[in-house]
Image (cartoon, rainbow over all chains, first blue to last red; front, side):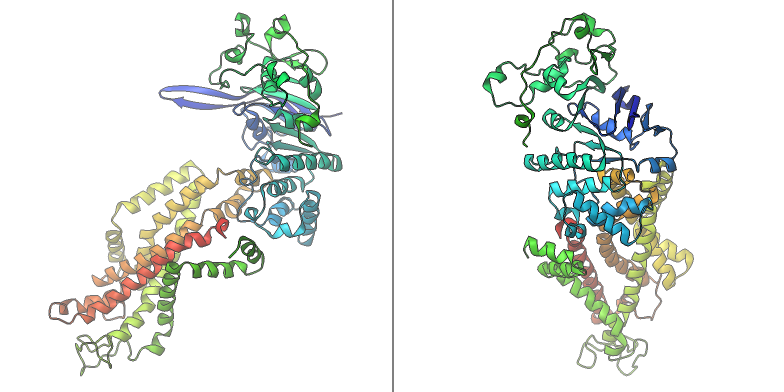
Length: 337
Length: 292
């Protein structure tokens, strides 16, 4: 089976000027992964970890400065402007804040139908009928089409963003924190909608989030990102029950729980997120990791650790970092169903 | 009006206009401005009907008469009826204001959009020319242009437009620069909008509102500049009916006590400018879709 999305050695850095010094921020540093048909992959990490930059680079909304991106077997990186426009039919993106990702002066219906119009996929009355169909599929009413974005609620706006992304029937959708601007109850509705649409429209998702609970609810596989690099990857349940990288443990410990017994077992995350400005070659978690040692200053690779598991940690492979089975709450307890 | 009613009205065709009117009514100051400007426009259009005397035929038997029932604003040294001429002058002054603003708006918006959107080089080129234009005091630049091209209505409009152009260009450029970074512009790119369409459909409609507000203010100043230029003999020529020209014609009579020759055209200028400025203050609210 060919992956719908293949990412190889993706990099994106920004030049900074601090006083007279020129420095480089490695926002995305050698990121590789793929998304299979029908799969949902979650990319999780703190703010500043580079996950949104990955999202923008995938669709070349921002130009990556290294690496390659393939949609199916067609390469997106290096594609001409015309070819890029055509490829974007097959890969779409839903943004985090629905109140900022919709044009405030365009009616909702016009915004959803716009891609059809742009790619000449339909005209006149057919645009409207397909737009209404998509509106319905995303759980909106036909009369919403004639409203402006500010007349809708946050959840409704995000459904509009989704409808606009899906109307060209892409196979792959990047969801860049689509629920983090929403209330918890609205969040749950949208997540359920995403799952339903995935089945009905045969979609693959890259779901970007900082919320592990949400990631667990929606994704079959999780990539953990820290300071521009993927530090751990694995199937969702395995990653939750047997996290291998110290950073993944920190993230898991940050999920609030309602059991005092479990709360006691937790480590409290210390230190600030690392920002990869002119980073040293070694592990980027050194300042926050309780297992940090001299060997961590050597360059670290993302290596196989068992079937479908990848870890970027020297201590894990030398056995210094113990593997601990975690007591895991069932998904229905972590996410509002 | 309740929120539900607002949303309801806005969904109907023409609801936008009705809603704008509703908001206009609730804002007394803006309404006063609109009434003043509308009145000046009506006067300009109906001048031949409502003026008791022609604008350019004097009565030698009635020179320098103070305001009376026959001549409400008095007469000047050639026996022109000031009241009639104040009414007629609204035509020329409004033409100049609207013409100059329309030209400055369109050209300024074009340059501003190009500067803010196309790239570094066009930006630098356009904005440095704008800097040159605004380096001169407005009135001096307008004077120079009219003096160089020769006094005429067209040249007067052109000069005033040129003076105002940098304001529109700067305003739109800065709006475009900030709007182009917003997420819905990125979203527009993601769904496959060509570059020019992003500018026209997604950036401009969200950037242009401040220019309309600016226009009402500039229309007022355009009248002031036109009157000023005509007053010093550049622009509209004596004895055409124009407020600045009329003040020019009466200037020598202020000391000898014939105040009405200059007072009424001066008051007409002041009231018209006030009308435009009052509208400008209220327009911003009316044009913001989030406040509808």
